[in-house]
Image (cartoon, rainbow, N blue to C red; front, side):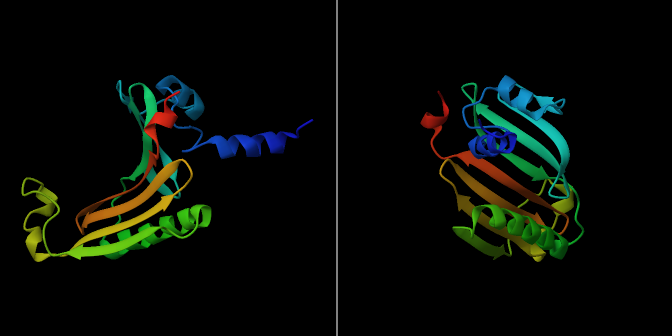
Length: 171
């Protein structure tokens, strides 16, 4: 007879993102989350909650009705570039403790705008540094990407999980 903790451990190993596995349907994912979605359409469902100490939008993306991508978008304004980098490094440390050292660990800085001129918070950005950080891990079934890019006025910051083999995820 299996103990309850052995069964739970086995189930944890079957998940690719939170309590979901690649290839699940949207109704399966919604059931696995157990809370009301923040928003949804035919191809996605989102939730909001704190993740790794940060306010996050949790998103699940479906292709042909099956889960193929998911992730966390951290939406809190962190202050200046140093604050964003500090949070990025914290999340990177947490992911490294789970997945080991990243296979890709890039720190790219550019003097050009990542924002278009229509974005009020990034007007005249040409005179300021932008930031682009990327760390990536590979698991047996997933690509895990930690991304930070933007400027002092606001950054896109999140973790994206992508199925490594879409054909295997659709069963």
